Amino acid sequence: MEQAQLMFAATGALIFVFGLVAGLRDDSLLGRIIAINISGVGLFLLLVALAYRGLCQAADPIPHALVLTGIVVAVAASGLAIAIGRKLDELRNSSHRREGDSS
Amino acid sequence: MMLWWVVDLTLCALMIALAAGSLFAATLRRRVIFFIAFGLLTAIVWARLQAPDLALAEAAIGAGLTGALLLAALPTAQPTEHKRDADRLIEWVSLLLAALLAVVLIAVLTTLLPVVDGDPSLAVTARLSDAGVSHPVTAVLLNFRAWDTLLELAVLLCATIGVLNLAPARKAPRHAGALADTLIRILLPLLILTAGYLLWNGAFAPGGAFQAGAVLAAATVVLHLGGGVRLPPFSLAQLRGLLALGLLLFLSVGLVQLAFGQALLQYPLAWAGSLILLIETGATLSIATMLSLVYLGGHPLRDWPVAGDSRDREI
Image (cartoon, rainbow over all chains, first blue to last red):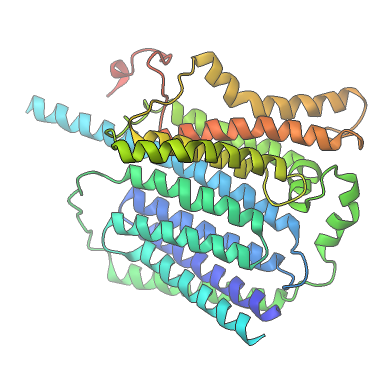
């Protein structure tokens, strides 16, 4: 039981760190959003693994409530990031077009 | 327990593989599809780690809504990706630092584990009879740590307002055909029924406002993707009302407590169950509206109030 806890916690730590680094190194905005989401899931996995108390015992509900909050906030933040990205593309395209007109 | 050890190892290896796929696959489309698979696997891992609430939320939100959101955001024409010749040194140093950070995190974890003494779940189980609901996660979310959930609704509202004010909603895709219409006709009532069931269930079993709201928002996604059926028409006032309903109900319940001389959001014992259900119902409707709007990526109304023509201010 302790072993399972450790295994999932270590997996979570790995996914968190590599998601974070991949997100920092990514070129595209959408790629970054995916990477940050992956990194977030890694962190959630870490918390839930720490809440785990074995097969025959209920897990600690406080980290579960925290992670539930995190999942919902993550989707809202991703949605906002995608909307901002769409607006940026739109502005960039229109400024390109204007440059093309003037030249 | 040899068997569980094998199951755990498989799950962990699969998670790392799918995470690597969604981080490093060649095209963005592949990465998004890997991400959806990763979300579904995560839901299974939550179920394995005895977190059924999270499994429900992850399947609906993490894999479902986020996946739909990312798929819809994929650029239709693959832009010519100009790979920058990143400095090799920086690349290696960043990877090295990442590996170091991972090692440190795992080392800290091994010293922390096992978390046994001062088990925080005891504090929840000891006071569960005062909560008005018998499911511990709902008790934490809506009673013991209600303040957090209140602020979370406010955060969601802020994100939604941001999305609403950036652009008009995406146009619905073309009509998907008669087969999809039939599927939608079967799915939609089921989704609404499931949302109601999850909401009611939250008091004593896994479920609650977040899962129910996400399932309702999934109904919007299905409707939008089908293309043939239009979304229910809302006036601006109705939309605003729906968005604010959860937060307003939550706040007014809290303030009424304050007026009776108790702490903010400290429910009286006899009323706790029904007050929590009331707040959760409002929160479900608001969360469903917010997530739907975030998925649609902007305001759905033609007469959306704009402060001055945005074209005048473009530089």
